[in-house]
Length: 263
View 1 (cartoon, rainbow, N blue to C red):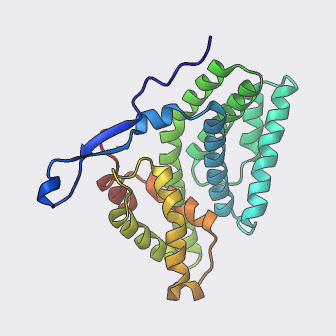
View 2 (tube, one colour; view 1 turned 30 degrees about the horizontal axis):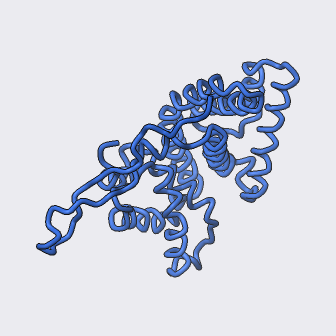
């Protein structure tokens, strides 16, 4: 049967904010988020979530004593190796549960047991979805992605706790100096969240972090903080995502004030 047109309307109409009297009450068409997200292909969704896990893995490696000196490139390579090995194990008829247990043992040291419990599960749901999609089991792949989304919020909260524990441990070791260098990034991010939202507001936490990472980095590079420490865009985006996952944090509050309505 031939594929029909997506039945969801792709536009949403809102009143145009214009003080000109002759335009009072005029309507402006903006993209509809429900329609836009419904059109994303399964493979694109898998790759998005895979990238999200990659950023989480980078955060864990950067926070572990045994791996904190690794470059971002080395961390990315390690993640891709772990991912491919798990995919190959599934192809060799090794159960996903056993693969998950192996990932548990290969994770870098974490301060939060919840992170070490949740990350391998989230990781394997994406690997399972990947393999299912490759073999044409699209409905099963979507089911796997749903299971990933079911624990995503828990993982985000656990990561926020992990970062706090990392800060505490590092501060105790370095006399309370740890992470203070990053405060300029946080305040730049908060300012941009409040003053540079897209029309209609921020659509997702991830899109806000992705779109503003380069601007936050540019402000850092043009400030006096650049002489104190250097940081790459990927690391900036990882930190922005982590701050946004803290539901009680300043960054999340700034995001919520300027998030897209009617989601």
